[in-house]
Amino acid sequence: MTESKRGSESPEDVLRAVLEEAGAKGALEQALSFAGLSALPPGRELVFKFIEGPLREALVGMIHPATAAHALESMRERIAEVDRSGTRVRSDSTEIPQDAGTPTLPPPADPVAAHEYDDLVSGAVHSRITPTWGMRAVDPSGRPGESVWAVVSTDGELARVLMSGAPAEVDVVVASSMAELRGALERGGGGASAVVIDAADPSMSVDRAIATLTSDAMGAKVILWRMEEERRAKLLEAIPHARRWLPCDREVTPREILQLLSL
Image (cartoon, rainbow, N blue to C red):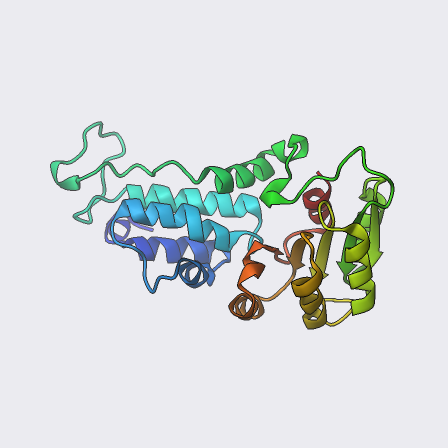
């Protein structure tokens, strides 16, 4: 993109261009919906907060964390390069233009969201006590079978990776009925237990699995794997608390799901 074209970009132009390059074209509309907005907020400081809040949340699971982190940084840099008059600020300038108002450097990133992405990208996630995105770590002193990972999927690799990688105190159950899923949740008792729903290749009706979780989740963490964006949007409209469930797109591998569950 040429200097002159970049200089005329609005914040929305920047966000849409970067998201399209990253393969997350629909993330802006989803983020606006999360924030209850019909358009970007006015002023760069509010736009930066929107990027670090609702937009970062919308990208979780939609694209790989490394891709998302790079896209968000690119947005901040490109917006910060343009002053209020629409012309580029020289990158070697040490002065703030008189008509630029408040400094245009991004505000501190949301500490929780930024830490989660940064740890996944850097690999520090492997040494964290509290798992990424709030997934609870299993209790190393727990009794065998005390926690349960219920898997609603017929994906052979996912089942193999979770069964071979689960800690000794965790049972992995492939649930093919509401009764099996409910029984696993009751036995696990929430806490360190979790449910993985594979929307692309489920072992039972996804709607039935979600209905069971709505009434019987008992604190279990939930991962929605490979659920289409449009379908998830409808789910969030019907069940608002599903925003606490972690969406993982097709880019996320079974081994990465294991990391999210077993840290």
